[in-house]
Image 1 (cartoon, rainbow, N blue to C red):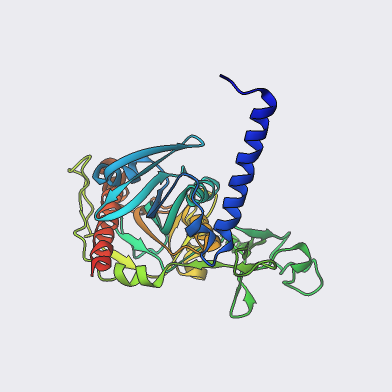
Image 2 (image 1 turned 120 degrees about the vertical axis):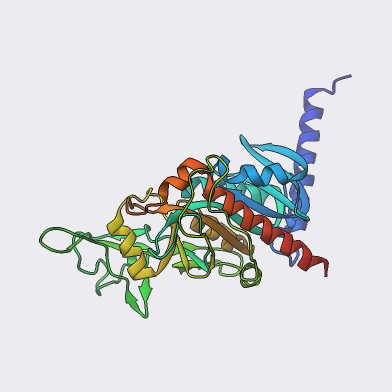
Length: 347
């Protein structure tokens, strides 16, 4: 027998009231929202995010007891990987996709730590194709104030003061970081592109929020990464005849950067290295790191180098595109880390 419409309406209202009350009870406690609020599943997990398929395929192949969840069209895979309960998702390329999908993961699963795994472009000219980098911090230097010339913007009075616009220039030792300059036959020409800090809010800094230039990876996870000694390949599985000439290495430390532009500009790459000592550039990790900070969840990111960003001077670049070397080494380090993390937690 089907209940009359008024009865169904009352039942729906009662159910909504119960859910609202449950939500209030859940968030009223001392635990952070990210650890108590899970719309799909509440088992504690490590959340693993990659930008596109090749980066996550190796991890998914080795995940056991898999279960797939479809959330707003995105496929999340839960299971066990090297002794850890994980949830893995592909974000899609770009800072926007990384932000949306990482937050979606945080909302639907009980993610206690976050891990980004993927490939990227090298910024440090001392790096090589196949190296795996694990930066200590991540920034978004393409978040800029675009001035009309190379002089410090002064819309709010003093040079460098943009606070009346609700933004803040990135500074180093109290001074705004220099703008990017184009190389021309007549010398450098200012672009007027000055780096900005990002505004971020969470439960600890509300309601005023704060401006930050970079987001720090978890010291505990970094310390474990420094102990790893993975066997990194010189030749990838897709075309073993294409190999790099220098043995890839694991490099822990330094700064990673992300932006919405696919970087193919050697001049801007040099600017990032000279002014930020950046090691690696991609289009997702700094946004992922900001989501982690906003949710107060520890994170780490592993990025294997596919090329020197914007450079045709990197003679080993064909080794990535032809053989899949970068994603193989990135997965090797990620798996080694997860195995070491599982052993550590069993002690």
